[in-house]
Length: 236
Image (cartoon, rainbow, N blue to C red; front, side, top):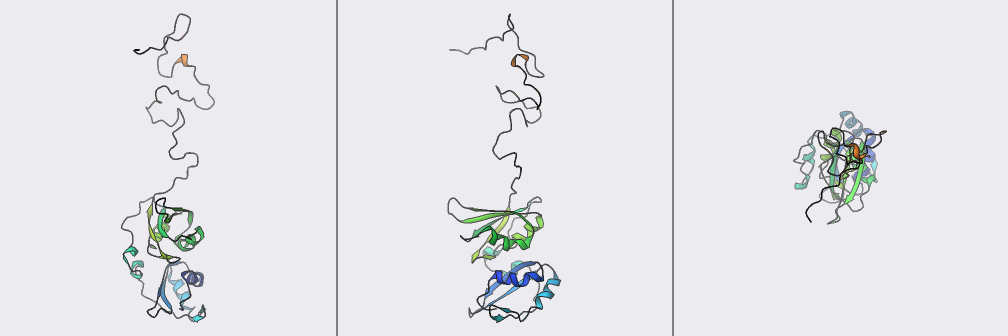
């Protein structure tokens, strides 16, 4: 390859052949051209890719041949390229991605991780302390997460990224994190509302007057005219 093609150019060229698992693009020793490896999920895609030998890419005909099938980490170098030492929880469908370039967008992240599996959501953010860009990518299946963490050490717009497992985000729109449950509802079995807080009746029922007491509890004593007794006073 010439020095001009990018990883995205390689993806555009070989993606019609089949689903790509990994692209490793490096500069040669003379620093006047590129070489690399493209790893597919299916062997049929490899056969289709070799038929593209001689295709002109950025003004230079490309040469290619079959390569030994190796683990993904064998194509990477550097301590940051090691696969995560953590293991994926059984219900994990989200990855954390750090080391993003400042101009990273949802589209650029999707182009890189879309080959791993169907993406449900991408959430871009930045560290409040350092301003470093990071994001969370949520996949539809856990298999997409497994493939995504293998891309740790890949480059995005010249920046080496780090990928690791992350906690799933709750999608319950009716309950927000940190909000207390409605009064009189969602209390654990056997637990009463806090003192002084009357429970709300079920929908369609009128609230019970205070002088009638609470269900399951004896009614309070009444005065001679039916009034409630005065509240006890503490010491002055």
